[in-house]
Image 1: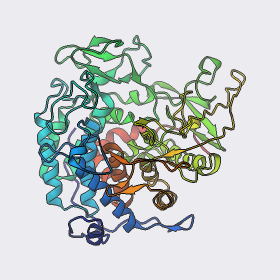
Image 2 (image 1 turned 60 degrees about the horizontal axis):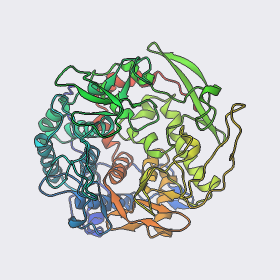
Image 3 (image 1 turned 135 degrees about the horizontal axis):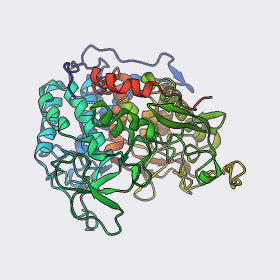
Image 4 (image 1 turned 90 degrees about the horizontal axis):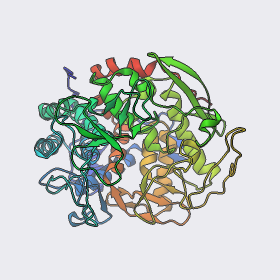
Length: 531
């Protein structure tokens, strides 16, 4: 995929020098691109303060810098509130690396760092990516590396358990998206980023064989593959979809739902011409509405339409007077992370243009009205009481076992028409767990309401440290996960960059080439979503 014109350098006049000094950062020069402030400046009595949001971003960037090894330019997966180099997690992933890169682009746009620092940081990370071990025939990367050395992990640093190197389609998707952003936004490293991006083969993950379990007409994306020894109990088969290099061991698992962060890999494959456009329509919007599928969360409503020769059941779930296309778990991450890169609501107004604002509204109403947590924003994050957990709004997920919104895993079960009786249609929710990155993602669609929610989190809870908002807060007990996750911090940066930096991440990703190949595909669809 080629694109002739790089994104020109743009930064934001926000009083960034004053913001940096207040945050304990070096002063940087401000530049003359205006901040886009939401038109109506009040949300629940809280004025939207763009300078405060830039301050949040500056602190968030500090956490990412603290996670990043100064020799390799690779960020750790997480770090505690101390932000001490000795406390870095000891492992990183392609997603984490990509998140650091696009966050650096946003930091420059907001005036937190200057163009020279941006180029230096990106160059260091890209040079490391050129040298570390990866699956050479496809140009794709393994799931886990030591951020201090760049070595592929074969032993987990926290407990010594064995790691079987795996090439993940979604993790490589986020790295690929970041490389494309850097290629177009950072001219001094354009050649390096292009070299890494153009060798990545998204069709390595593309399975068009409908004889394989679960593969539908149009084909699906594998979860990934092993190119060496597989773990005990592995379920998969040997093959090589690109015919280059030895066979690998593919997972039987495929990503088969549309409302998922994994659609970024489909977008990259379509945009580069490596995966046919009809693959986008092979994924489920919901599962069918008949009793054979009554195991899913609730009974969808909708109709079947045909796009590019693929029949699509345009189902949606009903929730609080809305019809919403669900994800697997009902989380903000699934719904909105690809939207950080692709202007989905604008390019696909009859599908994502409906679903994104409805999902955000549903999350807000769940937290404030249905569950009465007082705050909202549900997505996989740190567990305030343990390590990590998948949180979401159960009613917005296909998974009958839920991504639950509270500590107690309160299950929502509205039944499935006449096929399955309801067991808990009106749950009594308990200690809800919210994550700030979900509100930052929501800011792209409800800027004032999301800002008010974040202001509440900062005011009412011990939720903020030197690296910005901590990763998760239990709303009733007040228990806080006092650490920072690289991916979650990168989502904060990406969303703020779009809200205040004139869609800086989207502008860098959604080039003319990408728009020409991808926009006509997603524009034609009409979801079953609506109010």
